[in-house]
Image (cartoon, rainbow, N blue to C red; front, side):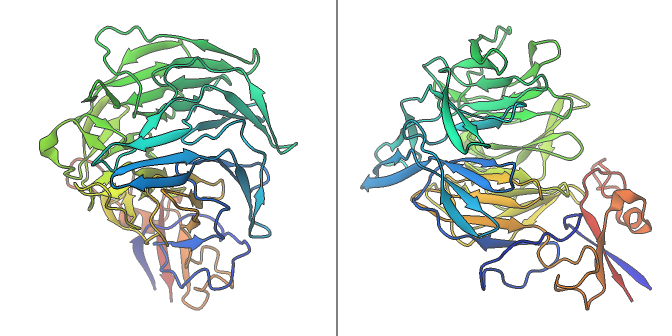
Length: 444
């Protein structure tokens, strides 16, 4: 007899790597587990992160020295970098940046170089605020060369607004930098070309926004702030026609929010600061439906998130990490939440080992999540979505005696069909929804 129980779990083979003693407790299949790594050499707030071709992770700069007098605070960035070596489970020193920098942007170019640009040398908080603001800009461009493990200079980006910007890779090999300064980087010419967006009715300026690459290669710019206003506007860049147009307005104006690309191609906007003070972080999300070119209300989260990080897991679920919660800032916490596109619901995820406000995170090619740093924080962690799951029936996974295996619902299984249906709001769930994770089968 086969019983199908729908849980979210990563599809694929169990990942094997060296784990420090006692680093992982027993995990429930489908929930995953956070694994604390050895501490970095210094605290790093808003560090740059990049998965290297050899499977290791490069961590760049970040706010290192934090000091505070009552509510006035400053963090000064570091120029140091380091590489986490998974094979030896240790940190290795990397090449220094040309100057202390935090909150920089990075993107891999087609020629194998890592483009590093933007950021700030320090953040400052004003009296009574727990929200640090960028102080000055970094206009230098650097390249990390993996083969030589070196950092070299590139052409400077135009000055005057590189903080709180975004950097996106384009299908033709160029990179789009969008902030108060806007420019394209051409790796062939090795040069920046500044530009202005001349779209009638546009007020969005390019600070505190998000930039999401859609499945068709277009770039969705959403929200942000300017002159004390939180925008609900969106802007869409089409690299094929090299053109800009206004997108649909979000339901709420947002800044310092997160955006997650869903497996079906839509985009979810998650919290941040709202334009409507009456909302008080009512935990709502907005979903951009690409096919209908509109925003609709998404499912509410358990917590209200400020400066969250949203990562899309390989099985299609979305995880929120880092950030602060609820209507009172300075409420740092180790909580996470996970969105299941099959049920369209948020549930509690496993707690991080420590709080990671003002951290950075990336999804590694093998599906794990690498989370590093935070305010006055040298801690890095790995989230393994597959911890506790036996996806191939082999030994050493912790479930070899239970007979539990994980199969993908989009592979035509009966279990996938049983798990499907209508969500009650006109949206179909597991049966036809892309990226619905997997079905856990218990075979007796």
